[in-house]
Image 1: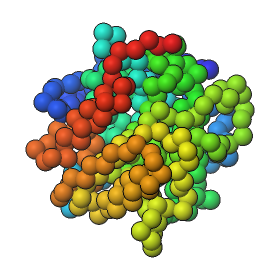
Image 2 (image 1 turned 180 degrees about the vertical axis):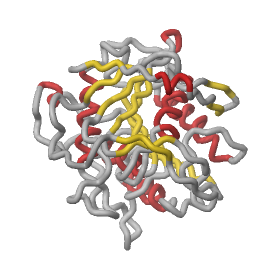
Image 3 (image 1 turned 135 degrees about the vertical axis):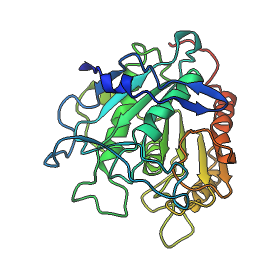
Length: 320
């Protein structure tokens, strides 16, 4: 598997200090170069290219009726070659747990800073390896607006398998690999957690013989979970036996992805006998990520950390 080390002077010069949970943290390994690996050994499945070069740009500024973080943050788009960017925690804090991070962006873009790099920094602070999944965006012509795109699930299933296959190399316990996602990325995290028994692409190598089942999933202000005209989960989702534990968080005043998406998913998980926890924060809108705030939504990371600890994912463990 190719190993790509990327040096980014701009990244070091553009350091932004992150504040959350009463702590001050620099961006993950700001002075170091994270390991970046290709998700696929060749072209990704059903990838024809033709969308132009990959681009990084700033998000549009929005107002508080729509989102909690209103200032522009870094986006990535035109992704044809999915990658994993791997941020290990300090060795003396490493729990052996890793979490794949799926930034949101409506399956059009990836909110790389707010819902990627900042999330990895939080995970590192609790002893977890943060692995940002750069999945394919924007939607291709055969992925209609208003429905989940299908190629990102291929990338996510392959990513879980790749991380598990390289767990020993990366200081990760193979039974401690979770997935977190935000907005459309929350749908992707949930879809990955519930599609482990049904492959979205044909196997290409030995990595595809490894399980694609995450050991837990954390969908945050997710979209595409509720059916458009019914009080039930979206028709493209299913909850098979063996679905891992799920932690859901949402803003009660979210007009981009209303909280009903998480509410009806929680009810469906409960009825299926799957361990699940749901947190709805009244008056919170969309896109709060892991940033510190006086609003109660900022406590979701603490609640999630407690949940992970209760599930046994934050205690030290052998990496075998």
